[in-house]
Length: 300
Ligand code: 2HA
Ligand code: ZN
Image 1: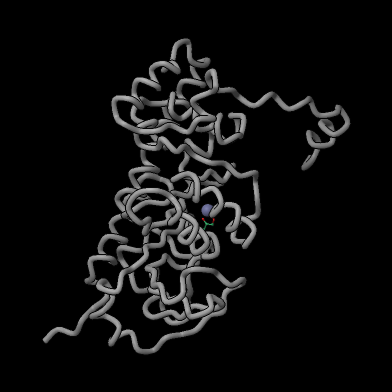
Image 2: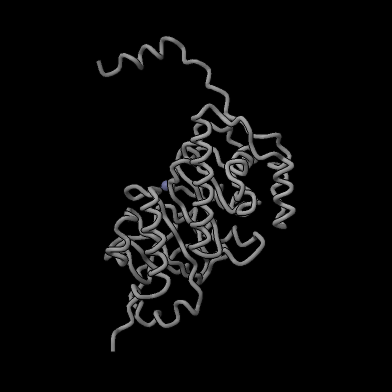
């Protein structure tokens, strides 16, 4: 009889598919991006006997509400391009130990690897996103969606303005993410602080922008989380093109958004619906001449 191989599980197969698609989309250069999927007792029951050499890792800060929960997670330093070829090196299964101060690695990450550097943001967001309505959110997904990151350099960075711009970026957006996309200020990645700030946004919205870096999404399935980012990224591409053509001359109106919400039975984020369109950030004040000259002569 063939031994039970974790690589052949539905959850590893689906993680391979989504990370490969993300790589092909150009959202995950080098080791960019990370994904986690909460596993149920049924998912793991038959594998637990073969995952019999756990390695324990302390977390930088305890996490709440996840005792005993298991997750399939991408590895630190893992290139999404390589997940399909070497799943056991680039993915792993972890379990949060009682008290939330440590995890055990049950499978994967090669011989001495570990979970993503963004594990605090993932675990905190898994806990926080349970407060949102609808089916349980089992997936947290982070990537460097190109056009959305580009927009973060030019849009006024508030949750309501960003949401409004993206809703106007394509007709399906309000229906796909009526709760909008939250935004942080720029923060150092991989820290507990950015994890706390991201989790707070994902308790309110399905998406969170990390300006000049990337996006986080929480979804019920890998397919849904991918679809959320794909939709945001499509609207972002349309907006980037539109802004590059000199800006919109006509757009989806507030009344159009209200009509969409009524037809599809969704409740749009009130602060974004209340805006009269969206705004670019103001141009930064011109740099003092001395500084500009210094910058200009560097490297001569
Ligand atoms: O895993 O994307 O934010 C690499 C990153 C960090
Ligand atoms: Zn990143």
